[in-house]
Image (cartoon, rainbow, N blue to C red; front, side, top):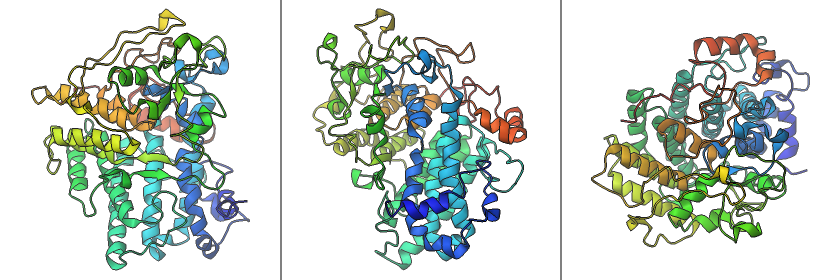
Length: 523
């Protein structure tokens, strides 16, 4: 077995049984490692914990967020065509997006911290904090309130935090992580204790510090409608922070493959054959003549489609597995290969965040147009294509969607936004332009793209063709969250029921908005 896996199995066995978030059971497990043993195998734990950011990827993200944001769609008629893609939400799939980060990220980190890492190696503790925030932000942005500050403190019930508290805790943890990294870098220039075991930045703490600042900016923008004052404070803090932000593709955060693990998009697209290009992505990229299109995807192989790029509408009726199998797929031969690192944040995203911050007049954001154009050129550089005259294109528009196999799925283009920056446009029009190009740039991170769509309403996405939610989700507004899995009600019922009543602001279904997803204008 790979060197990462053997020691990590010892650590992971401590968190894989019993209540998902009940970390105190580690202390009574007869097979538990003592603190010295835990710290002795610490270096082997980093890689698997980082990889668990995308734990259970297919059901946790690909069959939900990746489709909800318009990037992808499955040609497989899972559960007879009644599944998450047409809002008939499958409980077992939702559980995959809720439980695994507790088991594979929060649990091991809790054990490691309890062994004394916080004081013995605050720099390594900082990296684990950042990994935990990245993983758990994905959970809270799927579901809303989650157990976080009290996770692991009870043998009976694990209380939930409202989402505002979760975000405030994230910001506090970022304070600690950033301070610890700054202190270590200042005292040990060039030293990299995690080289060879850190699968994201190979122990480069200067890049981890940039990532910490950039993650703060991402989270700050997420809450701009719910708490504008805190959003601005945290964003301005990020933009003025020591160490700076991600600024070029060399700074991009991506998880390298190791220990026999393969790129998740490769797995779901090629061996599983369950993933294709989404119709919304196709219509924007073909309409804009986007040079990244052949990097992201491949032309359709179905003879009826004549080698064109044609995606699949979300929620269409799939009678059998082969109907849409030949539609455009992801490029698994050159881009999303078996060993390709898995992106979690790019410099291009940060330029677009700064562009939006500039629109809002926040200190340190710079110029909205300059940041917008830098976001586009940085993305083109990241994917190895020429920008050409893309920035000056003031005429190309998103295309209409035509499904040669079933005209019921046809749709007119929903947006008239062009590419070239227009200084005379309203802030709302400028925001649509920023978020649309951001959406194209951060592909394939469907989780982040879905969050942006819910927060801003952009880009304008085709709704599901068939809505099987039974009226709980508005087709026009589209899905806002995932419901808590039944195993949470079975094992932590008092806490989850309390959270729904006190914190969720609506029933536990896909139509209820999260705390930061406020139903009001962007400006």
